[in-house]
Amino acid sequence: MRKALGRGLDALLPESSKSQDGAVANDQVKKVAINLIKPNRLQPRKNFDAERLSELSQSIKEHGIVQPIVVSFDSITNSYELISGERRLRASKLAGLEKIDVVVRATQSDKDRLAVALIENIQRDDLNAIETALAYKKLMDEFEVNQGKLSELVGKSKSAVSNTLRLLDLPEEIQNAVQFERITEGHARALLMVRDAHERNKLFKLAMEQGLSVRKVEAIAQELSEGKSLEEVISPKRSTESIRPIKSADIKALEKNFEKVFGTKVEIKTKKDQKSGRIIVHFYSLEDFDSISKILIK
Image 1: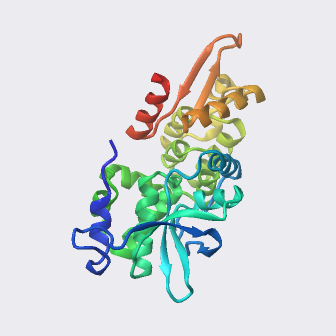
Image 2: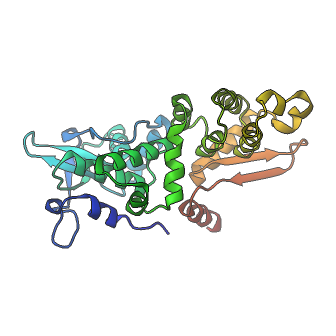
């Protein structure tokens, strides 16, 4: 269901970087020595989960790399610069590979490299919400496009692009929490509802400490946006309704296991008897929904 992004690259890259049929010129697949590949100076992704890298490394050992990384060739240093696929490159190094399959892509400038890196990372959902927002902003700044044009380039609706960019209005501490997966994008969006910076920060801390669900943070944020203080909203009289008990380590471990299977946030909510409850699998796009459906239907 994902909208093709070829038009995005075609609109951004200059004619000198394209072949006659409109594709990026001189693409070729080849094996190159890993030690000849330099990191991408313009890499939009900044955080790499060590556990997931280890899992990917093990998969590469067993099955190899399914999709080649993308690089450009530097004739001056006779080396390659990574454009996209840093997770695969890092995991391949962990796996002990000496050579790796690459797509060699001809690019003419840093702007071209930036366009390819950002678009391909966004297309594969390789970035977290904050990194995606920063990538959107960089595309807008570097290529002087507005949100309407950007939505066409990345194959997202205008509202989706706008909502993602709004995450950059949050303070750095909350943005960092999203990047390091201490809270979800849904939590961050709920926090945006609270205009009072002091009350918003208190709710952020509470959500972290108590492990509040997105729905609960949204409910509290709604009341805070109406002028109430956090203390009023979670007063002892209402605390049993406002804050769920902290989950056991076993439940959290099970959630993590489910999240590895589905590739998205999973919540296990048990009743007081601990013998029944609900398993909630979150999806944040139609692509997520398709992926989850395929797993469940197997």
